[in-house]
Length: 199
Length: 168
Image (tube, rainbow over all chains, first blue to last red; front, side, top):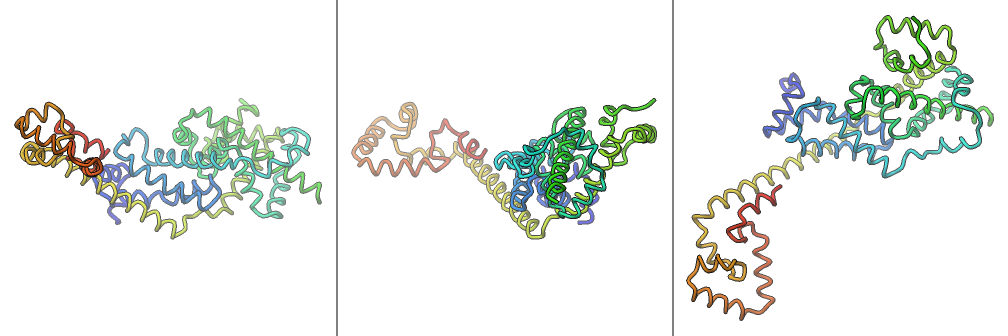
């Protein structure tokens, strides 16, 4: 066990390809938590996250022989996971969440909202209404914005790695991230304004 | 040289994650001193990322991990069985020239091509067999044909590649 931990992903992939089942088991141990976390953050339910996790590893296991190693194994696995999670989201149309509803009753642009809300106000709101607000806001991002936000800002992957996983350019990642941040902030600020008007 | 609000967008992610170089950091901080909008946006983002990471517990439950292991073990078994099936089917196809005559005898005549019938068997026997075949009730023929369809060797000698195709 300790011996296999010293092996690189590439070693384990090669051993797996040669029929060593334990090697794939080691890859699974290495990545299952990360893959589950990403799937959970993308899909927002335990059931969907488990589905995505299992499907991702089954797909990786079945396609390992065709994996040429042009990208890192982790990038490849994350890409499989992201695609499966996006497919799940598409099926469930999770991007239509309740946070979007109050938009019609509010006025003003995103820019003005940003100026109006300070981090203190945001923190106070999130403290008062628990973290569900934040969960809802992130879950309410459109899938392309959500995936880029989660990979870069929550999982802490580099911009380049995010671009490789999503098979898009670095400028495209930056642009999507910017729009995701604005969208997220807007959702939270709308909530804040609604809360203020209720209170 | 200063940095504009638009320029901030390009380097903001690196800055938020402490990955920006010293020079970039000082340019951003200079900008933030004079731009309240960017300052609030960045502070909000820092807070959102920090709180989201702190509150979310997305760790993999033990039972999920156990089920995953089982699923992959089952998948590995399935693959091994397929491989074995493929190997034995290949083995059979390779051996076919030696055992082919016996097998051909047991195969119903209706499933043989004209050239096969003509080449492998004497003409009278073929005709007799064909006559028997014709005399058999339709139901029985169907049953026998069905049985043969399931077997990888129940094909004419020209279709040796079939088992391999089935495997993939």
